[in-house]
Figure (cartoon, rainbow, N blue to C red):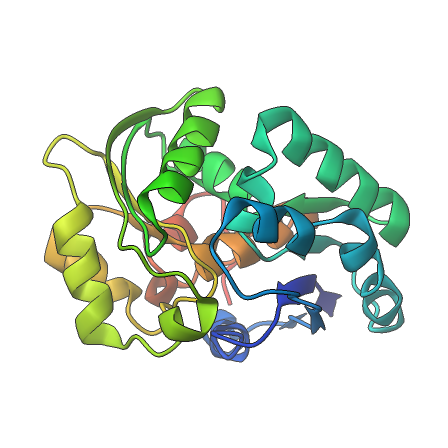
Length: 243
């Protein structure tokens, strides 16, 4: 049994995690601890506070007790808003507090794009434009070529959490770029775990979503690979552990 821990801000799309656990269909558990979100706002000052070391450290003891072997801060905006170096410091602090390997959703996106052998990406974000632009800057610092960035102007995670497949597909279509090798949907408040095959079929390319890559990153930290095609092209890469 492999247990992988997640620190998730507030309550929006956390039900993606039991769904992903079911789709992995293996000896993998995904214990999740909710962190104090503070103010629910896709605004830089609120996001910096949301991802502060104290808020993250408050949840690590519960994850240790769950037997987690690795922990991922399951928040994209609350990590990339610190910038490339600041996000590294955030992860280092989390690893020290938790006593286990750590990462964040922002780094998960960068690693997952490389796993797919891609470099050119498009971003379809729920965030306001200024926050979406910060994510693009983070990706460029990771060595990726960002061809287009679309923001949706949504301020709260609570609102994003109400979106269904129709809204998610519309966002993906609007944010894609014909020359992008991969489309990125960077918000862990967005329900996507059940929609990835439809997204990839619609766009004809790999689609990376926040909760999907967050779980993949935790598997990477634990040196596990699982073949789970219902979770998209990212979960069909070799070498695999067949479930």
